[in-house]
Length: 126
Image (cartoon, rainbow, N blue to C red; front, top):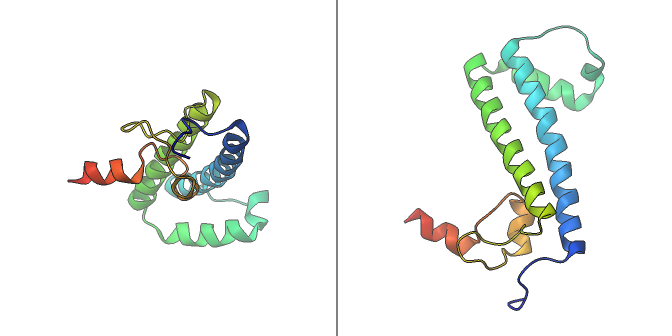
């Protein structure tokens, strides 16, 4: 693996699918948080979904300020995932921006928008 300078198209496709799944869920969660902030009530087809019910009930106990902060964090997460998709398209995905080495697949599966390998990330903390 030390000889590889980038992930193969097949590997990039695997990561793209993972990111698209996470992006879809993140967008749904963002909409729920946004609804909690704006306090939109009313019956919608989405409220028949069990997942929606659980999140809706949880979101209704959040204060608007807290829901707003969570919505902002969720939007930032969505933007990071979208940026990762761009890196996949230009085939620079999974390359550490500090060292230029490949970020291990395990790390990318856990944090698909990572731009630093674990060594570079740990160096930045000190």
